[in-house]
Length: 101
Image (cartoon, rainbow, N blue to C red):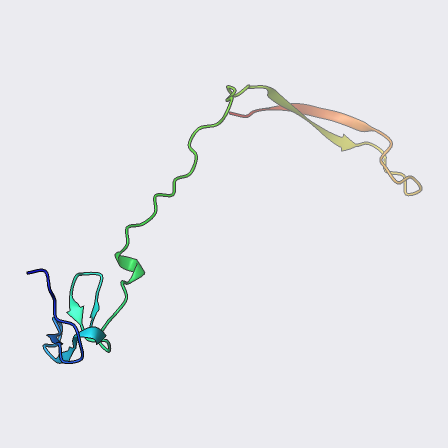
């Protein structure tokens, strides 16, 4: 025991088609099948497990949100002088406070 057939007269039977091939021209596939040289197929990349790529979930040195009121002043121009590029004065109509959360 321990000796295997080698040489030009050794033949093998393909596990896929059942055809006879010279043993030295047969190839082993990824699934263990011994097939002829013209039947051999490489392993498809879809059969490999996907790489585990995760996004970072935590922030470094997080701070709590601060709630600061945002004051927006609403005004109407009083005088518009065509010679001036900007209005002369504003009249206050009211104040709007917006809270952001």
